[in-house]
Length: 190
Image (cartoon, rainbow, N blue to C red; front, side):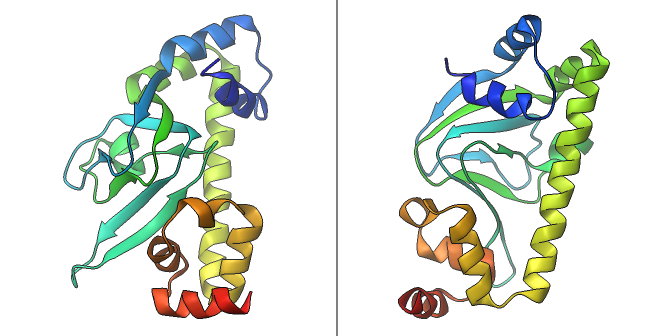
């Protein structure tokens, strides 16, 4: 089913029974989105979070120079949202766009809160998911500070080998914090 990848991902965090699976299927709505579509825009409130069944998303910000800064590249089987907007109800300061055609499952903040309220098990899922987000964010900060661009690129390819076929080089360069020309040189060496 459309929800099977999501259910497998959740099952990595908590055990699921058939009523849990029914709940997931009723609360997460399927959404097929073409490439180049904005899911969340700067200045908008967004109460939606997405699970990526298939496809790639970019989370970015336009900086003062007018250049687009890629904050995060989201790959299949990951959750994506504007954290400030989703959890705090603030206007998003970033954009979330599809890079490829995407197959998404979407949940609203109120439906997620409802899911958490149904049992301690779901609260545990929420906590474990947030812990995994935090660990990932910390690792990204440490990598940016301690690894060379070449090492960051190699690590990205090792974790997500198919990213290079799906995400334009300019986005990958911005994500690892270098100019596209520098990334072209690194790719020639690899």
